[in-house]
Image 1 (spheres, rainbow, N blue to C red):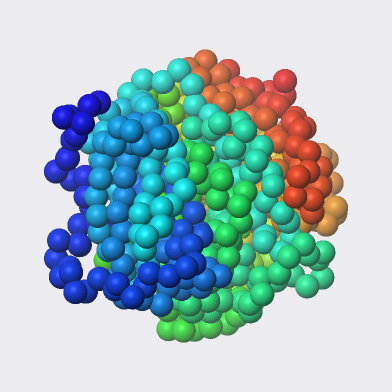
Image 2 (image 1 turned 90 degrees about the vertical axis):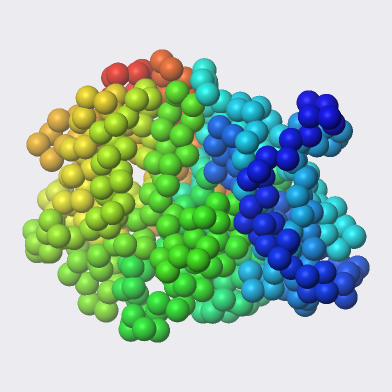
Length: 507
Ligand code: FE
Ligand code: CA
């Protein structure tokens, strides 16, 4: 593309950028110019489509503290080359204090299926360049890096170097991107340096701390991310407004809203999903050409309170002593999201139907009774799970694969309907960096759970998922020592599914 073809797409300037035209020059805070690197939190791209993606950064002051400034002018450039010789989008806008000086730019109207490079300019500084890409119309392959659970105090994030080296098309983060609390009984490698966040300033500070990690920043620069939250972005095991701290809804709601706002301010998620909405929407689709649909769920915001729980604390329950867990009226998705997923599965046209979500989906029996389980995962919402599994039997859904996190361990599970018809598979990724569960946490897994094909509760790591028209391959990439920044990463196990088989087999 030549300079003469410089394409100012009508909608190229959106989000924060669009507001600038209405911002008088005097409203821009010239006094904010300072010595500290305003781009110390890095840059990110996310939620790619065939014609664009969303770009993110957040301006900060010294030591990643909030910028003490009013509205700050910021420019964004998108190029077809890493040296920015061919700039195809250029826009300017304002980073605003009411958004923590976070900036989201939705880029549209670009040609499909090619890489782009982007950067920001503000306060006399230029950000590092990130690489994004538009989704192709047709694709032979897709490589996903699937991650979850990264506890700042419990691990170095050096495993991201293995993800960067693998050159994924997308990083898929399934929640617990931040942790709100410390676990003083576990070994630590570094400190939050702050108490548990309870308000907007606290959650912003926690997200900013995470974003200072150089390995995490490098992974955000290498490709677009698709993210969804789990519980620790707000509070351990919360369920809609039910929470273990016993806060009444009128006190927990503003805390949750602050946590949600900080999350959106720090993630490359399209602002149209959350800005100006009473209830932000995180569930969405990010489909990959004619190859794979990706349905991204939010199983926290709308879920029923934990069943048979005193003080709303999710716990191990016996389902035969807790009829409530199976009540059809209970939901982990909420009605609207469940209908949305059902509609998508009914109308599926791509060979692979990936469902990306937070918590363990298959039954997980903790003893031989097939009754004892943990109510914070789908076992506490069995009717909702049965309805989703029934939907996966639609002829249109040839290869459903559920992707999960949360349990800090790797699992491969067979999925079947409530009447025993095999429908597909679940792949659970371990923590990217967090302590492993105690060795006896899940009981005698092999004896009590014949539908579990593989589990590894000793290692942190990530799942490399390679999809083509004929097959899906999952490689469990495990790290030898999460405490060491440059620990070795190796493939501990690999599983392959042939299209149409609904069967993930160890290879
Ligand atoms: Fe976790
Ligand atoms: Ca979790």
